[in-house]
Length: 403
Length: 193
Image 1 (cartoon, one colour):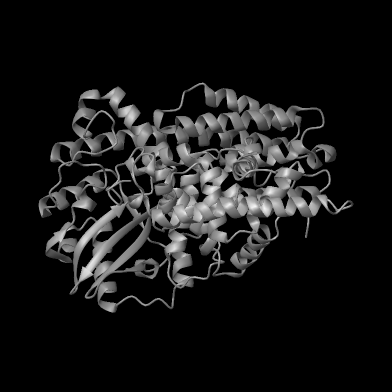
Image 2 (tube, one colour):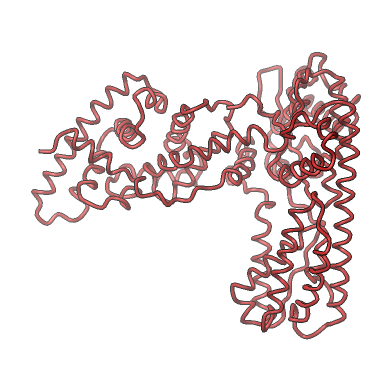
């Protein structure tokens, strides 16, 4: 007869997870991004649980699938839907405004939050201060860029606003009145706590075709018509690798003495809140963006020239071998000058995509051939094409538009 | 986990780094926890929901090894309680219930290769749900009495009592199923019903 202990050991060995060692471990960084998105959604009150994610994150697969369908229909001629550089994805704010219309926020708190955030985004520190209670705790907001030892004084607030202006901050609330996107977090009466999401550009990211960046929000606690606590959470998942870290690498290499003034420490994760620091941030972010901007203009010119050659070339088949040679020559020209630090990652990717596309075009039959269009290779080609279209300065190298 | 929510620095923010560390360290055990309790295609949902909760409550996550126990508690409630409010979640719950209440089916079945294991899982499924959970936490998660008390939010003494009763009843049920199986010459695979 089997004993109690033997049954227990049998039960231990029956562990279903024992045979599941091959399960993939999902990358933490990627998961964080998804969590941020979902975290914002699930915190919204009175929003149906079927609320879909913002389309931003799944834009490429959708576009690619649509483009692939078009390609499959057009036998022999590759017809690619014309993209639109200016199309802004629907943001979190839009969804909130749509879905959360039955979540009234107290009118007074609403007016205060709107006024404060608009003044803040317009770098009008004095106007923003009028919304703050005399003893407001604003230190979390002032420390949000990593400044240490902040006391939360109004003088520090003015410096913080100046720092953001010097860094080329742009607060984006173009989905409508910002308060429509604020979520009431609750709080004990008579205080009201609001969470107000926003997108942003920083370090002059708009000038070099990067961003805007999402996932940020203000948390404001309002009591008796005044803000008694303010904090800012920055969505750094995309911003840090695309902007903050490349800029920190560049400035700390090119101007190490200045970097020592601009940043709190050698980790370069926090901006120092001093007037001297602010002057340096303005100067170096300006230089950084200008270098990036020049490189983008150069790339745009090279790609436009290549596109013109394609238009002159004509021919019955799109994306043929001849087009591939033109693109390959453009790539040689593009690579002749290394991208600046600001854009190194983006242009390394862009050039790899161009190379992939040129190779595909120059293969026998090219990508316009029916067999290739329907094969796996055509999907890769269209993926590359659409990725390239979204990279600064590279759109003309996709050869979209009139021939 | 952090007192810096809302004040994280740029670069790789401290809260990002802390959460990534938590995730990297405990993803596997949390996934195992979920896999032991829900069918295969629901495991990833349960894991995602658990870490979503951890992200939202990142300030509450204890430091060190206690974090895993805390995550187990979250996962336990995610599986047991949180998937109730929507149609999707009701469907999930229905499927979960089928896993728990119909012994040799669902998640466990795919890995039970012999009759002994099949029987012991069938026996466990006949226990009171909370008793079975205590058994799983002891045998599969290898938790201490105190940690189980944290996960289930009951007193350590209650855990001890349940564990004692669960072990005894598991063996009794197992022996009963075993005897039924052997007394039925042509019993179909899957044991007694």
